Length: 377
Image 1 (tube, rainbow, N blue to C red):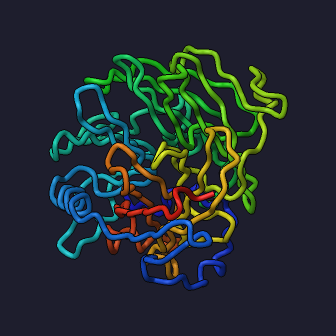
Image 2 (tube, rainbow, N blue to C red):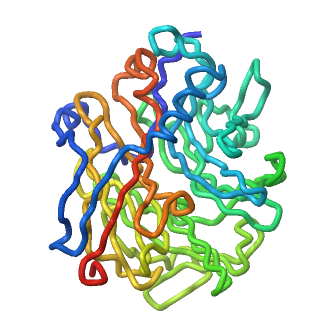
């Protein structure tokens, strides 16, 4: 069956008249002094991951591309790569996708010392999303995956539900949040729990603070042309069964409507990690329409303020119909000076995703950050 529905991207905030993508971004990765001289930044493609996932996507007859690309270390030492919209099937001799390629809204790849295994629902012959909205028509109501965390022997993945509001590919709206709990060893789905929300897309980033005993969950208030980060936390780290608290103007509260804005200009997906002694937020620059810039902010607290905006990279793919989005860091795969950063690639012309598989595959970049004078303010 011919699929003409482009993988739907809440991440752009739907600001996108087609003419907006004509803006041309710099095609060169940034290697320059940034943020008023506070850091020296150099970036290069991570060829090992590019080739590992590229070869697997081209030859395995399973996963051929996806977006989101969160990563979580599992208890056995493997890495779970968490994806939203996912293409499956074969890659043809021209490095394209057949028009009848299977397509699902979420999936996971487990990377066990370089051996990759794709997990979806359904069967290999008739794959389905790993998690589906109970009783819903997935063409009209579906889950995308947010960030994830391990709690005991469970992998907990944030769910972001969207529903169709019309017949065009951009007619959809945020409908709610949930948590999917999997057996961390087998990825068998154990439960799906709905969460309270007040318009915030929770699950944009997760930070585990073992010393404080909290798992922090960042979310996005997506107003399309403006995006604001919010912060919640769960004592003990059980996202499905624990008590959620939300950071508001008067401190922490169990009332989700009390949640306050802590930073403007984040993408719908980003990362927060403790890097070089400070909390570091990496995101696509959502202060510009369809920006090719990947930036970081720093803070002495998980609550912010996040300041010292520093440009890390310019995505060379951004041109014409092709756009990039949802950059994030993967601290477990970097070191004290280097962050592994991924970002997603897509196109406003659905045909591009079938003509060339690389037009819908994540990219992997090593960003070396050397801080001058001890810190970026």
